[in-house]
Length: 139
Image 1 (cartoon, rainbow, N blue to C red):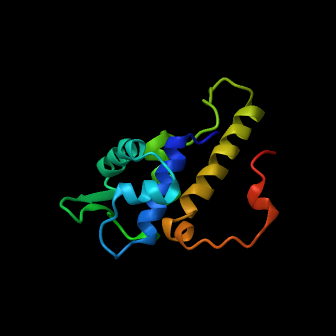
Image 2 (cartoon, one colour; image 1 turned 135 degrees about the vertical axis):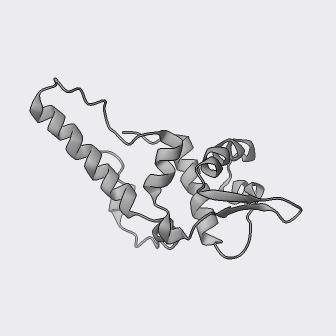
């Protein structure tokens, strides 16, 4: 399973909002600037997050976006599902060899477990301990 820029940038938005939780609305312009991202692209991503009631918008000169719930109540899985769809490495076919089908299910369940047990609070408070494992993206 590969997470696209939609999922990655969506998590960036949500982590930025989690870091500012309780401080009032945050503009997409400031998030885009802080992370060197396209404000226009972030605008496209915020709509599904708002429609899923993960964020709420505040209008006006000092408006922007805020998390709709506390960072500890929103998981990475919530965000990824909204922007990427169901979490599955492959389409599971019922008449596939049982060993392969069980492997795909185990992979899906492991990915779901990580995403659903990692909250925005965890991500917002993350401190890199310098582990080389943080940079190994391929097996």
